[in-house]
Image 1 (tube, rainbow, N blue to C red):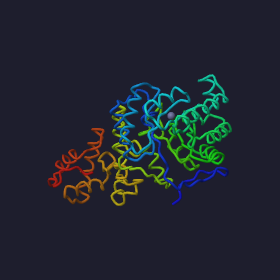
Image 2 (cartoon, rainbow, N blue to C red; image 1 turned 60 degrees about the vertical axis):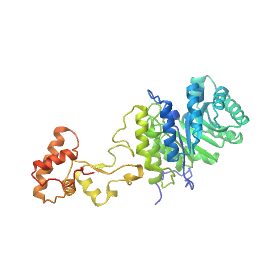
Image 3 (cartoon, rainbow, N blue to C red; image 1 turned 90 degrees about the horizontal axis):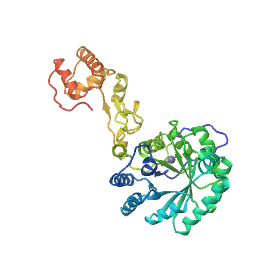
Length: 398
Ligand SMILES: [Zn+2]
């Protein structure tokens, strides 16, 4: 079944033949989230987990930050992950020196390209940006580094300047160019049109780096892939500056299920990875977080439970096991007869409607009074009150 397409008469529609490649930046952009500070042990554990699920590159840190960051980069490199380990560098010789000093072989060199950033942040102009990044890529190449180039704030830059500069970067040896929506200002339709034009003008590997300030990072990342981008930049749970980045787990599952694009990651570890990163970041993992939240495969309302029990795809977009999750039938205010009947069956009880109705009423009343879903023990108690036979199965329905 073909994936959804954005309407555009001018932009190309590209069907990626190979799996989309993931450069995960949880350890760099993710850690830049306010108040987030990973320990060395946490960084190593997250790098190992990212490697185990098969991301293609791990953007592991910023060597110019100091000796402690460089030590962690060395330690990650020493584990010899299958994934490439990338160090983030400004277009600055000192950053490249710092990367080389800790044994990095792949650097990501970043240059702002919007007039706003160039003028307001650096007091510079486009000519300076062009000269600066040219000198840096030559320097990196002279030292034997592999490198990609990041165009910071590209979404607010003049597209003609970006095309011109990207063409030169290809000539200077940049096989991959990252196009950054630094402040999350893209929308999917214009992203598809603008990025499609870019890919047509400057073929080769492009990477999308989307921020989530308007909640559109995943949508914009998908639009970029539809426009011909072959790399995506993500973080676990979308952890990152301000509202964060495109979440790894959302992008991967949406690419696979909505765009039918091959994704060669071990997605069954997504929930475990999300919990690990949430813990290390000291941030709660919202129960309703897409793909990995505790409740995203929980069903309470009567109609939904009835449907899921008959056929899971009625109210589930994919099998929970695909992301290491589990279907859960919750009992609460919105429960219906099918839930109660299912629960009774778990206890080896068959009941007719006259027995189920009063029990259902008690489930609803208790849920409203306690303002929470009911768990197995609650239900067992309710069953006792309803004077039904003792349950044969101790475990709550799940
Ligand atoms: Zn970023």
